[in-house]
Amino acid sequence: MDGKSMEPVASGSQPSEDNVARSGLLADNSFKPLKDVHPIRRKQIPRLAHGLEAVVKKEGVHWLKDPETGKYKFDQHLEQVPKVSDYDFDRFGGFVTSSQDKNLIALAKKNKCKYAGSTSSLTGILTQIYLLLSQEKLLNLANLSSDFETAPRFFTPGQRIPASVILRYRDGIYTTDYDHERDGDHEEIILLKLGLLLERFLTMKKEDFEKYHKTYTESDYPQQKDVHRYAKHGKFLMRSQLDCIHESLPGTGVFDLKTRAISQIRHDVHNYLAYIDCTLDALTGRRGTFEEEYYDMIRSAFLEYSFQARIGNMDGILVAYHNTARIFGFQYISLREMDVSLFGRAGAGTRVFLRCVRLMELLYEEIAKCFPQQSQSVKCTFEKRGQFLRVWVEPLEHNDPDTEPPIVELSLGLKNIMHGKIARGAYAVYSSNYPWTIEYQVKRVDGHQELVRARRDIAYKRQECISRSLPETLPERQAEDASAASTSPVEAEVEVDEADEADEAEGHVVAEGKLTA
Image (cartoon, rainbow, N blue to C red):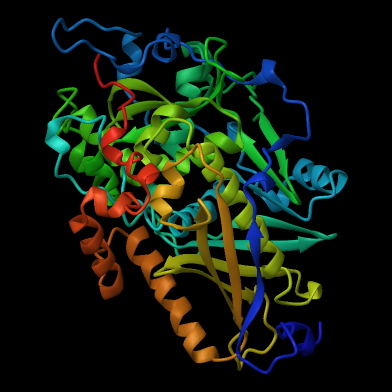
């Protein structure tokens, strides 16, 4: 590979260092739903065990053990969380990244897709696009109790963390792998492996699950293969793992399994053992309750959960609340319920999702132009900052040890067009009944390498601080948080110069979802 192949491709004939690489309109009728490209093996999708089917049939929290009577509503053995150290994870089979997924690559070629990725590598990108599209719309807490009337309504730093991925080029296809380089090691300590373990724990008979125990020496342990949905949007192929299925649910009947550690552990995961005596003692209230955990999910997880569910054509998620030692209860949360908290109304999330996917594909098309194909792979970091979404693109390999690899910076700017004029992002997201066109512009910076690198390094620093649960010290982010916290719902979420828009104010939202037992 020669040195010239590592240079960024010229983006235009103009000498300006800040070129408009692309601009245009995405009309309301141009957004199409995802299309399945491969039959789904529905019979191989896991099913709930131990009577947990009752959770998906009735909304609200289901205590594992009734706090009033002391009686167990489900099998008593579910209360004690299996210890990660006791089980052989090699028997589970490893996670296959997009670049190693032969089925994904073969289906991409067959369906003439140029880009491919899985939910784990794509939802962070979609989140950054949504933050730009919605102008960081405040969250709707109308379905929570009065204890949360003054609670912050903006996303947590963890939900806004910049997303880094590696695009690996091979045979005309860019696959997307999540970049772990600046992650803290906290997930590997307990939560990631515990999540994998509990997925099997909740969907298998007790005697079958125990065959994964290290003390079990026979070779007849269950060999459960993951089932995936492969869905196409334009030139993009997406893969989603299908965790569980139940026929009583609408649509495909498929849903995601989520194991949710209590907030004290998630905020201090290195010291998780210090919190194994912390419990959830009530349904509602500000501290030590299921409602507190639900509120935290709204701010820190619902957005990615909703994207994951839509990529997989799922109805919702089933959450198991625990403290790494004990499970307290379960709750089924539908996509409609998540939509109300995220966007203000049930059903609004579908067209939000499709716009985010289309914009992601548009960005990939520009990323692919940054370096020659012989570079094969590039690292990309996405961050919504201010009024733009910036993407820093650099070659994964650089042959000159004496110089820094070149970086191309792309910046995406958007305008939401409704009723023939510019609309606020919050109104566009909420108003599911009106045509919604997006005007976009992608700018490209090839020069000013020191400035570009400095901006990228700020994103890297934010990743490191958030992933290690350290307080952020970047003033621009603190200012954004303070502004969001002090902005009234009406000012933040209603376009006041349209009578129709005034009718769309958040105060008219009917809350959906329950925390009752």
